[in-house]
Length: 330
Picture 1 (cartoon, rainbow, N blue to C red):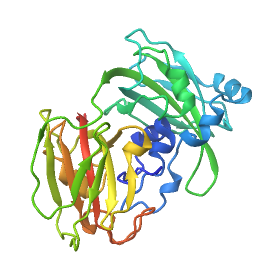
Picture 2: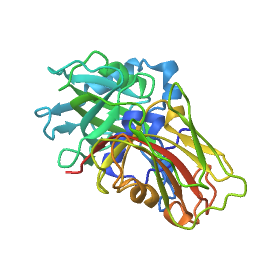
Picture 3: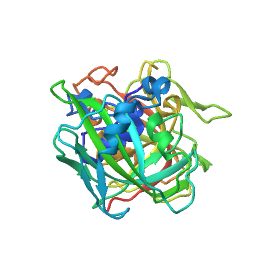
């Protein structure tokens, strides 16, 4: 399940999210995004695992990319004319001086992206909010994982990878990534259990991992309006409609078919509530960090009459979402 199905538009900061997590954030779909396959992405976790070592030619090519400026401030990223690589490649440009980055931490990363062919700027996060990334060697692009392993907060990494643009052409995207901070977050909801209203899909949690499964009541009739049922009430900060949230989640159709799961993808995901399907934004705003929420989203607040990957048109979507962290927009 390689599609983050709740993602919407391909924004500048979204390019960075895709680059960081590779297949885990590939092809952000939306109700108004018919060509999600053109999202710039790094080499997928699956395909890169067997070839985490970049080619000598790509390593040499990346050495010709220069980054100037102080870490934490928007740099100048310069690429040679018609720059390209054949696979994902990364290098540490500036070592950090803070605490050592550990597997399982949530990193805040300021980023700048340019197009390899001519250096055209694609966007950056320095004037907005750093991109959150759950650092796990098993869940991000191996070349990035190798570059970040053993580094410290304050490190700057240069990363490049080939992708396919909206016209089906192979292009290279280049990124400067500054690790601004690192923190540990829980991997599942923590709080007080809440008794849900009767008649809703029943949620059962794995006793060890907390991964949810659901049972759809016999004869269940999908609601015409949004259902946002708190299952666990957390004690953390209240989520605002403009925030980004880091979550564990699973999604199902009303016939019980699971179409996406961060648990199975191997790591939590971070989404801006302003860039997800409306049912997510409306259903999670006002909830608190640490909470687990059951969302039943009618087509009008999901993908509507448009199919999205394995999700048929006019589908009601069922999600169980654990809210692990929230980040306010600048």
